[in-house]
Amino acid sequence: MFRSTQEIPNLVAQVIVRHTSAARQELTAEEDSKRRSRPQTSSSRLSAMSASSNRAFRLVSLGGEMDNDIFDTEGLTIMTCYNLLFQSNGEYFVYHIDGNDYDYSPEGMRLYFESASLVPPEYYRAKIPPALADGSPPTAAPLGSAMDPDVYLKISGPRGYDPTIDPAQLEEFTQAKIQLQELRICEILRASPHPNICRYLGYLRHADGVHIAGLCFQRHVKNLRALVEELPEGEVLPLETCVRIMDGIESGLRHLHGLGFAHNDLNPENVMLDKFGQAVVIDFDSCVEIGASMSGNQGTTFGWEYENTGISKAENDLWALSEIARWLGGKRTYYP
Figure 1: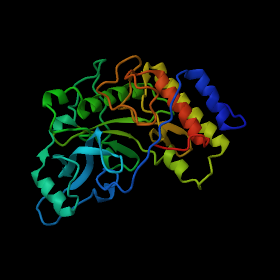
Figure 2: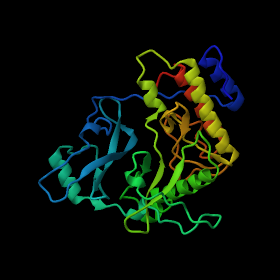
Figure 3: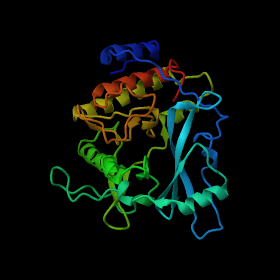
């Protein structure tokens, strides 16, 4: 358990010595604002709407693949293809572009959308299971949860869908499977609650009566990253605040580990603060049994992974915990 000391870096050293032995190489994230063709550069253009068609749409993501052997004149890796993901009337559509150029004007996006293919809902929307492992039915969220301001509805979308991949291969990794796995984990956590683990309220039934529309959780307004980024440049949180937050995160993780699971995606955006300023761990779509393979799960956020073994383990969480301590203390100055 974290204790108050003279400064956060001392806490960091204790955590690292206690829980990790592997040498780490810090990763840096550089972004070139001149690259017009990269997805990050185009994020401000990703809400194209048009009144010229009967179907309104919006571009929700722009995914692509990079070829590490092909570089542009500035030495940056070139994107070799793009998948444009659109949303319209509650459904998703995808358009695949070969090459590293595309028309991101509203007119261009309209043409891409009109030629896009429907993403199969079964890729990202799981069927409601008739029963859990213990034979009990899954928890349905209270009526009106979707409109309750104190409820956060986590909706699964077709992240990672690629229309060029054989559907048989896609069956091994779908957002629907990840959603179902998270529901299973959340049911276990609901049966064994902890104040530093986000409270799960149940699933929301889709209008078709068969599928899961989303998973409902108690809403918390601000995450740890947002809290820190509100500080004036060069300032850090008070020591007592850091200790309280770190104590809460570690307590939640110890509870999770005691149940036989690892979170595997701990980072400041997956730590919320409740109305009392206590840390609450969220987001369990990478959470699996300790020792199990993480293949087919959401994975770890870039820059916050312990080591790329693909195995769920407590060390993944404890290393990320030490990195959060370094970040809170100003010793980790980058955020990927």
